[in-house]
Length: 291
Image 1 (cartoon, rainbow, N blue to C red):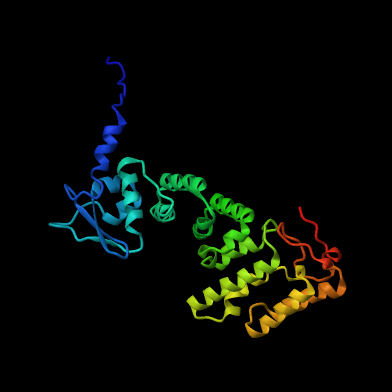
Image 2 (cartoon, rainbow, N blue to C red; image 1 turned 135 degrees about the horizontal axis):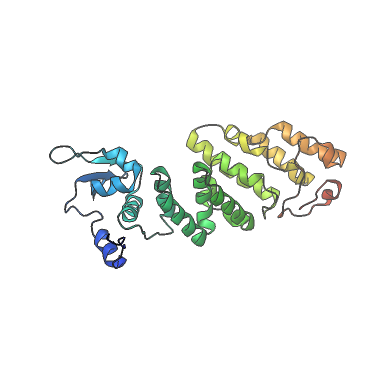
């Protein structure tokens, strides 16, 4: 009886390099993609994609058509991200870049490539910075990536003022912004948060062609107006008359906190101090314990 066989392995590097040379190589290619808004033509190999990824197996079917196959149009994925996906499928490795990793991560999630998704998440944690964090948070919220979401929120809590000034902040969805406004650990004063929320709502109103107050409605309830001093609240009330942002009832509740000098008597009004809340004289009347 023959002894059981033994699997032996050759060097991985030459094998990986040979397969990498086939990425976007028209030689022996039997499928073409037209990718991204620039409609870039990308060459690939049907059998390799199908055996590595269920998405492409379903997309391409089991048999190529006769003659030269028509290109497969994938208009929503950027060219650089798609080439990174191909590199991973061909070689099981990928070179990631800070400027495009979120696009690669999005493609990995959409194509069901769990290992590539995890590689992108690990890379993101290493390169995350103020300019990238809000965009990363939005991707995490969109695709339900819990660990990335928590990491981004913690980063923004520690770098709140800088993050609020980025373009990524202005492009957050209401669901993503709510995560931030509900946090006690933001290192920013409430007055600055109100200004940031107004800027965010103005951008959304311009894009969606809707009133500022309508865009802001899902998030402004989390602003802690009772933390503002009376002079700040008066100025906000006047600005709110000129450009509605916050429901009048919410401002009235904040005034009640000042009138009663008891934060716990103003039902529904958030009176908790955030980590970055600047002290004001009236705070001693409110229930402001910070944990």
